[in-house]
Structure formats: C-alpha cells, structure tokens
Image (cartoon, rainbow, N blue to C red; front, side):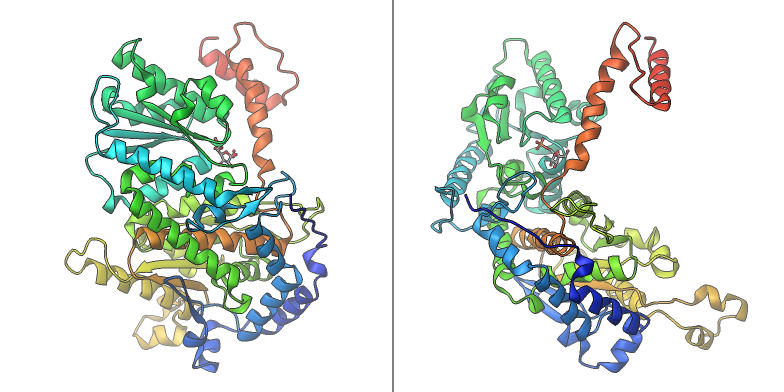
Length: 549
Ligand SMILES: O=P(O)(O)OC[C@H]1O[C@](O)(CO)[C@@H](O)[C@@H]1O
C-alpha cells in the first residue's frame, strides 16, 4: 500500500495567497474591456487546446500575472505531487483510506498499473470484456427474458453517481443509441419515479440493471424490490427473475442477498468514487445503448484528458487553469455560484451531473486534516442548455448584482443539421459571451438613440467572466474528454483549498435520521418522539394523523 500524507496547513498561509490578495487589490477593479484594450494578443495567448477541447480563457478578469500567481498557489499547495500520487494509486482519500483511481478505468489495454500487488488495468479490462459480451448478447437478441422474448427496455436503478452519470451520458449520446430499445433511469425513492418508468413497459421484455456501489442505498434497494414485485406480478410468481435483473456493484454479498446471481454482476472497486464512476461498470446501460466500440471511444476521450492533466505544465494545463480561475472568483471576488451553459441540447443533464461531481467533492468546511478551511470552498454549480437559459435566467447574469462565472460549451458540427438551426445556435452563444464580457456603456446606449429615462435600464455592465469551450462534434470521445476535464478541475480546486474531494461525510447524518424517523412515521403505536426536535416531532405527528395512523 502506498501511504500518502498531507500537512498542507491553511491556504491563507501560503505566500501565493497573500500575493493574490495584493494582486486582486491592484487589478480586481480593471474591466475585461480594459484588459482587452491593453493586450491585443490576449485571445491567442489565453486560449489553449487539450484533447480536442479548444478553450478560450481570455474573457476572464485575469492577467498573465493572475494566472502566474494562481499557478504558484497550486504549486505551493502541492498539486503536482498530488496528481502523481492519484495516478499512481496512493491512498489520497485519507478519510476513507482509499486510493483514487478512476483514471485507471480508462488506461488502454496492455498497459499496467500495479496497486497493492494487483494489476488494476488487467482487472478493468476483464470487466469491460464481460460487459461487452453481455451487451452483445442483449443487443443481438440472444439474451432472452423468462418467456423467451428479447429485451426491448432497459431500466437502470441507481442514485447519485450510480444514476447521474449513466443518464447524463445516455441522453448526451442518444443520437447514436439503439432506438429499438427503450432506456429509462429510476433514482428517486418517490414511488412516482418507478411507477412512471415502468407503467407502459412489458415485463417480459424488460431488463433491470441495479446499480449501486454499496448495494445498500435505501432508494436503490427500495426501487429494486418494487421492480421485482412489478415483474413478478406481470409474469407470474414462478418467472425466472434472473433473466431480468443484473447488478453493478462492489458488494457481491449484498447482490447475492438480493437474489441476483453474481454471474450476472459487473464489479468495480472501492477506489472508484460514486461520482467518478460513470466509466466503470456503472456505465453498463450506456454500453447497452451505444455499443462497446463507442463506449471504448468514450474511454479514450477520458484518457486523453488524463494524459494532458498528468503531463502538462500547470500553466498550460486546462483543468488546472479552469479550477484555479474558479478559486480566484470564489475567494477573491466572492462569487457564490458557477454556471455551466452547454449550447447542445443533448447535454441537457450535464449541469446536473456536474452538480454532484463538484458539490459533493468540494462542498467541505474542513481540510483533509480536519482543520477549518478558513476560506470559501466549492461554489454552487448550476446551469441549463442554451438557448433556453437566455429566455429565463440570463437577465440576472447580464444585469443582476451577483457575479456568476460561466462556462459556455459548444460544438462546431451539429449532430442534427437541420436548416440553419446550428448557425443560429452558435451565433447566440458567441453573442452571450461577448455581451457578458464587454457589456454596453451608457454612452453607447445613448448613441443608439435610447430615451434618457431608459438609458440606465439598458446599460449592460459587462465585465462578467466566462470560459468558452469549443469542440468539433458531440461524440463519445468528446463527452469523455469533457467529463475528465471537470473531474480534474475538481481535484485542482480541492488541493488548493486543502479539502478531500473524494469523501462525502456530509450526506450521512440525513440518511441515519431518515432511518430513525421511518418507524416513527409508520408504527401502529404512537412512538416516543422526544429525541427529535419539537418542529420535526410535530410534523411527524401531523403526517401520521393525515395518513390516519
Ligand atoms: O452507488 P451507491 O452506493 O448506491 O451510492 C449512491 C450515491 O450515494 C452517495 O454515497 C451519496 O449519498 C453518493 O456518493 C453515491 O454516488
């Protein structure tokens, strides 16, 4: 086992932090207009390319010196050493004593990475091969349901990382998915989710994938039991459910207990965090949808960005620079949120996916050593596909009082080239980034002939920063590269802040309390609620009474 230790100390004690504070006092008030005016070569100098992603970082409230100081901060915080430690399998997730090796999920076949005496690359490819063989059988109508019918509906049951990645990626790539198989995703313990997902399906043609790293998650297990009941009520009590259920998990014991043959289980490893797992066997539904070759292209996209992140100097390293700019706005400008605005309808769930990735990772108040962080950490991430957002919340982005750094994502080639839709789409995204950055002054508004009493209403303050990411076409490779970009951005930010981006202790207490409340809501006898606060106890009693208990 490779031991890994950190004694980083607070980020504010870092000399680069003090230098950044002084630098912010000096240039924080300069506008993007002024920066462009002073530096004609800015767009070229501040753009870079990584694994097919072209990134324009010029519309930021940052100079070369800002980037230099941010990179110094990352160096002082030990980012290069942490990157090496992660890729080599050291147990950098110290609060759970685990390696962090999602990058091993996409190392090409034939290479090797030995961790604790095991070649994890060989294990990864053995699972990928099993997944491929299974997917070929289902897609080739060789895997038959218990009545002999081929599979025409696949329902992934999972939540958090066992849902958001699969559903995001399926929606992103459904243009190259099998259209004769219905793909559905059930996550919420709210019964509506599973009822709506199954009510028009034929159980004889339905395959459930129960996806859960732990196989103990309340929502997933509740939905899995309900799915089994639905199947048996449709096919009769003697139906062979093994033809309709497979599992993706690290927990073979619980999979067996549920009644799924472990021959139909696809494993992964404790060194894959839930929110970093979409390219593990958790992606089985996606492989069923797009096929194994396309799935391997997705892995290649991930790997290309891994290589970039691992081997590129910090000052040309895209995930590092984007992560550092996020720290710059969060801690020196007080930006509380970060928007992701994909101008690609197929990426409709990408912002939701990034919410778990970023906020479960860096929504932390203490450092990896357990001390208060002392500065603001992870921003609130959110977003919607363009152009819908323009007719909704962009008013606030343009003229509100809150600074919202934004990422615009666009693709040069349309997936669906209908008429002039795509050119119009792209004109919109470029226009939005332009207006956010450069705005419109009162003089310019007046020069347009606007009446005096409306001038201030029409002034666009501008100076609102954004990154533009332009890719060629939304392909599995491109999607993999984008996800890896944000995975590594999260690590860069976490290391600077000194938090552990790989644990999620903050979600545990709510689960425990729900477990304690459940019997209080359902027991025949009025339970003792005195250990809950009076508000919660009163609401529980009201619920019982409204349910006639
Ligand atoms: O895959 P599992 O074990 O069901 O967990 C689902 C999700 O629950 C969480 O632990 C949070 O509750 C996530 O980190 C994880 O992705």
